[in-house]
Image 1 (cartoon, rainbow, N blue to C red):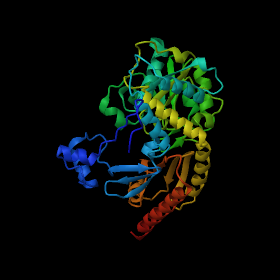
Image 2 (cartoon, rainbow, N blue to C red):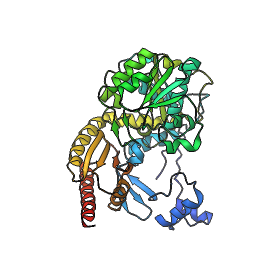
Image 3 (cartoon, rainbow, N blue to C red):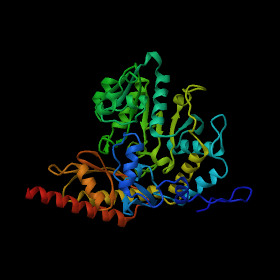
Image 4 (cartoon, one colour):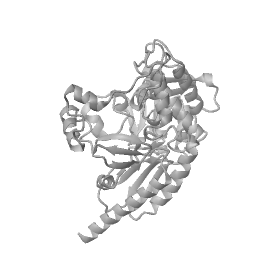
Length: 437
């Protein structure tokens, strides 16, 4: 593959990894399959993720290949990240052209790509509001976006509003601030004491929310669909009630759209779909925003947009022109190819087909964020996930009774049907083995 010509007209060829390996005297060239690479991984990489299931070496569209040459249909997309699939030409071109022009400048400066992306995110997140009322902070991930949102909450609250409310089963990230907003004890306890003042209330319970809110609350942070909780949508009316109650209490409403935003639900933001009249103070984005290139964003409106001043927050790489160019390419592709409509249509059809599979108890979610709830008595979802991987499908299990699907928006109908058939076979076999035991 060649890099596009530079302004001077010169071009260069990407280095051959096998040739580089031979020059280093290493055994990368033609060496290990999955087993060999995993052995090297264990020796070199911190054990924060456990042992990876596969070593992936190539991707195209909704398909990837491992180091042994086995092909998989990727129905997880890097956990809702690769919304356009792998090696999408629009992202490849945008990143290549930007790198060939200007790769990084630091935030002592800005770039046209950064400004265009900020303007675009304001219009997507707060349609109908005057653009000048909203502002954007660009980060590198969802965790960083939520960290910045937490700091906005603290700036809003000060010493008179020390409390921040989050929901039970919430997941907002793993840095110390974002972790303080995350409910799962196994994630939190090894790193306590965490930043204080965060309280968890039952998700979807308006009475609990009403009781918890008061003049000492700085903010409420919520996910419209709780992905790590098993793809569970907040009940109808909850977002509207949350907006009204936070407004009455003088607290900020922060909506975490890291997993659900950028078209994943069939709308640009899931809260646009679930509660069209709700305008939050702050929205956080990441994952699908860059289509696989790391980027996160905080979009704030009204008074919340001016709470962080010079020197109060920052990032070295956030808003870099390469990531911004990728995000702009993702947005333009979603628009030009009507992928929001595609996500809505495929998601609705697929959910109905999945719900008809024997052994599926419930199908949850919107668009192409789908939680497949398994019937009681089946093996844990992790075992079903492993069996599906053997059949060439990548999914995951956020809960012992749930399989999560978050595929690329470009997934074909045939690939969706093939997965449904494979799931039916796996669940049928599991039920037969249970009956025979």
